[in-house]
Amino acid sequence: MKKKLLSVLLTGAMAASMFVGCGTSTETTDNAAPAAEGEATESTTTAGGTKVGVAMPTKDLQRWNQDGANMQKELEAAGYEVDLQYASNDTQTQVSQIENMINSGCNVLVVAAIEASSLGEAMDMAASANIPVIAYDRLIMNTDAVSYYATFDNYKVGTVQGQYIIDQLDLENTDKTFTMEITAGDPGDNNAGFFYNGAMDLLKPYIEKGTIVVKSGQTEFQDVATAAWATETAQSRMENILSSYYADGTDLDICLCSNDSTALGVENALAANYNGKYPIVTGQDCDIENTKNMIAGKQSMSVFKDTRTLASQVVKMVGQILNGEEVDVNDTTTYDNNNGVVPSFLCDPVFADVNNYKEILIDSGYYTEDQLQ
Ligand code: BGC
Image (cartoon, rainbow, N blue to C red; front, side, top):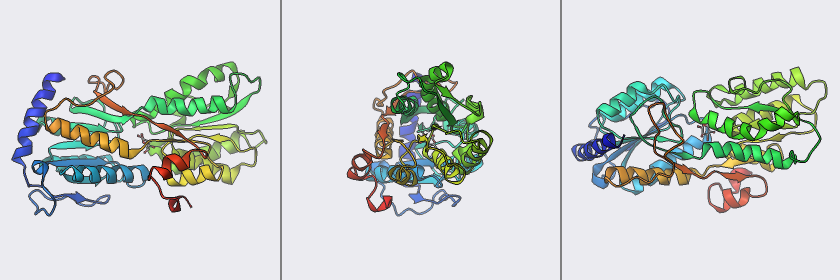
């Protein structure tokens, strides 16, 4: 890996000088055509006219809009040109966008993959062009083209959710029994397993003891996963569970949801199909709708991942790579993409609920008060 990185750095720097001024800074919407090679540029071309391609999965989910906007702002402030693309959650679109970024002279790629294992062709192309790739938030699997990975501590996100449930219900000291249903993320997203395992490693002992009962019997990751993290899919699955297992008046005490888009689906299902005592509902991301639901008492907690922190870290990595400096990482053991461990920087996720959202979301300038009305 080390040897490869060195050659990447050298040729990356060569590529940087070769492609001076040949790109254009674009922010496209989903499906918009990427800028053509050699198109006239109006953007600033400091930092040696270096261009960074940023491939984001979708505009449908709030967090990726914020991630993209933050990356663009920070990269441009550092003097880079930026080619920012969103792929409507369509893997083939993302592959073409990355290929276009390579063809149009991007010097570094930052990629938040839609599907961890489906970027093979594009990654091969980046590797043969010696263009360094930073996996953004989601690890790209089965390739040696990824030089670095920057994300949040994904396992910790799950433990924050699991520990919250344990503390709220005082599971260590209770002799009561609580019902729980689990909604996890997209099986094509390497993060989803980390979130699920982080929470389940803490909660499984209580399921084994009988303190927690999963009435549907659906506890394995593949049974509780939600394709594409879709709100509608999580909602219809929860509607089925509620009508099959809780229509007899049994209370549902806990809804362990891996993130906010799935939590929203569960909350919609509860609103339409459930009259019992309102359960604990977990989430992740502090999306606006979910934060509103926390304020309204329909979601118990979320996990705040400040996309500004991640963007800054990645911009720092881009600079370090291009300048041939040592790249900041803080984890060299956890994230193996089946071709070896990818050196990673893990940012810290933060617990959020109705008691601290003002401080972490409003006082920090992440949202305005109006956005949460
Ligand atoms: C991210 C989460 C996000 C989910 C759905 C995951 O890879 O880490 O923050 O909620 O994708 O977009």
